[in-house]
Amino acid sequence: MARIQILELPTVYQENGTDETPFVLIIDEYEPAQYILGVDQGPSPSPWDGVAERIGARAILAFEETIDIPANQVLLEDGHTVQLGVETDLQPFRELADAAIAEAASQLCSALRNGRR
Image (cartoon, rainbow, N blue to C red; front, side, top):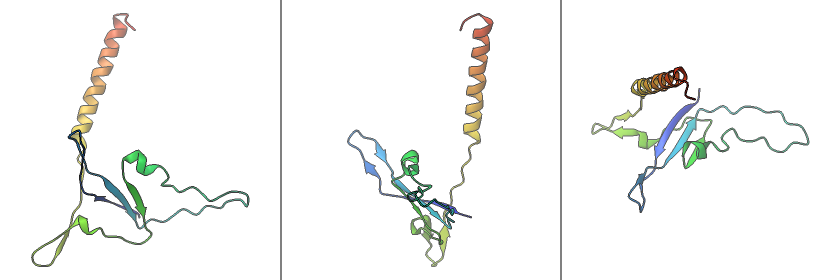
């Protein structure tokens, strides 16, 4: 199964005072799909076409073999390395989204009851 890693690049400081931390999306253990094309068709499009632009990445690198990004590891004093991982907790976001949806639904019902559209 393919793995996804993120390699953060050096922070870019903008003139307007905002900072940007660009990144590269690394996909390894990727198994490319096999397409059968007709004789008159050109090369098949890459499944990654346009994805970097849509997610804000500088690039997407896909490898069939396993790639370990050294930036995602910490070397301890005893010579051992620790692999860093990120686990997201989206529950607070879900709660905010549910509350916003409930509020919008309540306002819509109230407006419809009062005859406003």
